[in-house]
Length: 133
Image 1 (tube, rainbow, N blue to C red):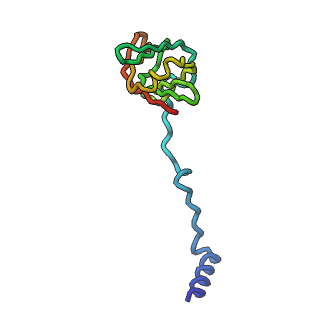
Image 2 (cartoon, rainbow, N blue to C red):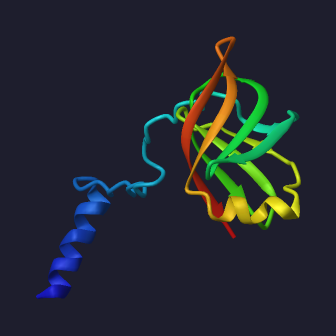
């Protein structure tokens, strides 16, 4: 029975009554929503940074005018960089060496105060600290 079915299907294709199916595109190559551009300061920063601790609270002061509000701070130990992640998705990276005497202060910090300039004003944000090893 299957031989007859295959023969009839072949005849339909040859006569042009049944068209071949177009291959479907995988889900990844089909139309995907356009990505929104990142908002904020993105990439390496050439800015001065000050780190201090008072009353158990770690404070980082970054001398830079940011374009977006910071959401959290990441310290990547292997790359020795501090990344300031902003709400628009941009990540500003400070390539500064943290002094050995302040390493313990960063490892134990969960929250910190981040002082920056935003819209022409000096602003202090309370943000989370993420440590990547």
